[in-house]
Image 1 (cartoon, rainbow, N blue to C red):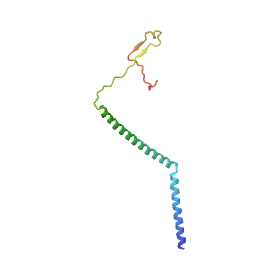
Image 2: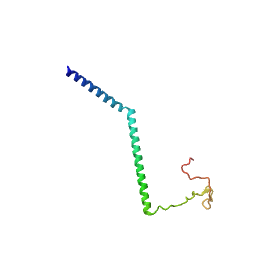
Image 3: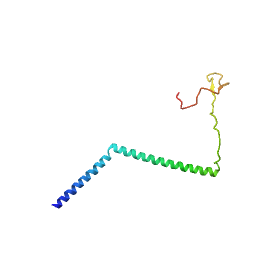
Image 4: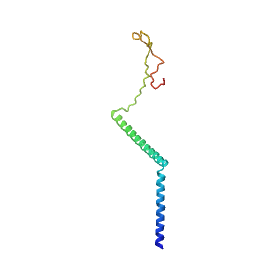
Length: 118
């Protein structure tokens, strides 16, 4: 009698354990769970990539400081940036005299910005 009770209890416990494991695995394989796992892994990879980029930048700045010291480039430089370049626009392109005597205009409304909507 004791032997039968023991094996019945052991079988019931094994059944509960196996059912629990299968249900957990099924919940892990749902589309929502897989999407959440992929998002977490992508976030972790992004953090690792950011940390790597920061480490590379720190090493780059350190090496640049070492090279500046060796080459003596640590002296302060007070440079003024040059003004914007102006291109002269040509007027009267349709004029037959254009090839002989083009007319240049210093401050034209013509823009050289390629990103501007036309």
